Length: 114
Image (cartoon, rainbow, N blue to C red):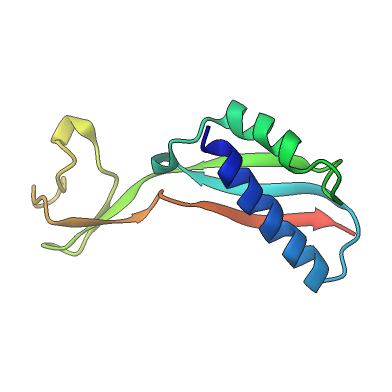
């Protein structure tokens, strides 16, 4: 279950931010989860419950937002959402020379607390 490793990183990042900003209590954490991470929301929520125990995040709610996969075509320089229907090729120039620019990461967008 790789969701636990993501949650441990989320908790570590949030605790570091709380320490740097003198935040004593966290009520919610908003996280953007890229579709290419392979994470399942329900498993992330369960892993978060375990990862936050005995921390200032113990009462925090984890809010998840799905992040679409976006690629940049290196032939025509356009961004697009790769689709299986088109064999993940650029829908504009039909090229396969691309780079994923969004959708691989799990990012803490913001923290709500005092």
